[in-house]
Length: 408
Image (cartoon, rainbow, N blue to C red; front, side, top):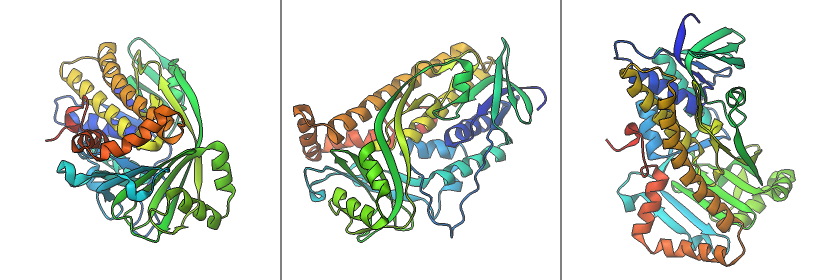
């Protein structure tokens, strides 16, 4: 690739692809648009209508919907494989599903509380939007990088690429973060997440169901074909037994843990699993480098906020870079990158702290504080005002938002 790019995004997952699309589309009409490329060795294709639902799904908030629309991807995502959910029902195993805390979109005059989409669908739609905006997708991974005063040189299997700014969107094990020398605090939740697709005796009713258990958290997420995606975050020993169980035994354990919320369940897919770890980069930026998404932070999946936080990173970084570009500032100017770091690091910290509190006091707690938190679900259920605050946070429409994530 000849010349020096303004921005090279390393990692074409949903967060990296979104950042690239926003940068390209946001400066497309400028006299000198930003020159952007994406490094992504494994590009997925959009799933065909006849294909079964994938195991890996993401919950998309209202803020994420707006960001994906601005990136040119929402029209590609919206369709028969996208499921809107209108309600959330949350309860602790000490009560029955009939006593669940209920969040309803109607209580906040919203059409829904968000969407459940396959990760592959979101990523493929974004990469198609990236390509449509004129950004080159380089089918290669990073092998090494060298930082100079005026640029970073990235070595790939297709040759060297130079850029004023490198954006690390390459996941929790980020080679960019390691190569730049940025450090991160990492801890093990000592839990394993099990994901699968299940058929249920009763319809999911466009509702996301979540039960806090003494050994973790179990969620049923509604899918467009009437099945549900389960995410069962369980202590490692419990998860090992669940993964070793036969499909029939697993379904019986699922019915017991859920209190029969959706009736008898039946596995219609394989089970997949992954260990749960928390990650928080000490710094999100360095000279000519910025981290977004899982490269900067990883949170527990119980609130479904991982991708949403990453998309907000992408939108915030794009907003600041586009503004600085119009002021003819260098894309890698550290002053701009530090503004991004201060903005997003504080917002992520608030969400991460709240999620860890839910895991500690609702899913695993046994002391007086935990019992108080468990009773608190009932108190919240009786207050429309408090419920609206929780709904706003779930929708991603509270806090310091990028302009494109706000109501228009």
